[in-house]
Figure 1: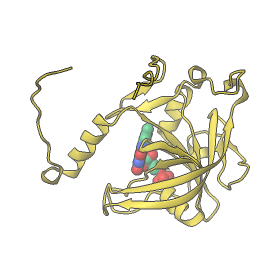
Figure 2: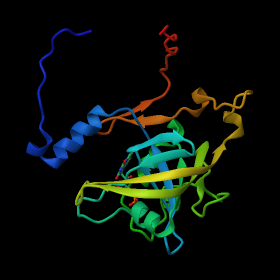
Figure 3: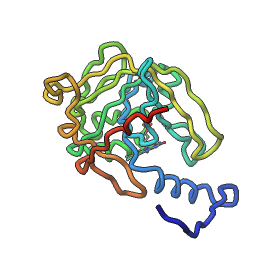
Length: 213
Ligand SMILES: Cc1cc2nc3c(=O)[nH]c(=O)nc-3n(C[C@H](O)[C@H](O)[C@H](O)COP(=O)(O)O)c2cc1C
């Protein structure tokens, strides 16, 4: 343990919002990536990556992700679609699709489907209307529970809470005991700036033994 350390305090209210954004992204990491598919009211299948993402419970299984308000104060297509349809699919991002995933993050207009623009194959979902991504080995079909705005204006959060209704796992990514083969998944995570991490360097840390009361 470090006995003494000199800390610099960065008071958020005294800083530029972009600087706070950069500090947050450089300190909360690695962040998993939800490759989210939604459907527009006009039937356009939308796809975009979000690293403000996590699993948050399992009764029922639940996820959150946050499409932030754009720099010009308008909502991203994903948020517009979610408000209209209330359904989405989280597709995971293995190393093999990192570049096409990045391509899908381009701010295409709402009438352009990132499935076509970035070269992904839509796969019909089972219980929701937005399609899944065939190139991703795990899909989570979700029903929107609630959107919680945090702040307002540019870069403010819109925390979308979803209940997972159905998991799809590629059969060749399942181990004989029915659990998911994490090594085979080979997922990537987001760091600060343009940096990413893989899940290839792992270690095991058993839970602490129960202590006598
Ligand atoms: C790896 C990665 C992670 C991202 N994470 C987020 C995020 O958590 N929140 C966000 O608002 N934008 C995030 N973006 C940017 C969006 O993907 C981008 O704004 C996209 O154009 C939104 O698409 P849409 O307008 O179709 O919803 C991320 C981009 C990349 C490449």
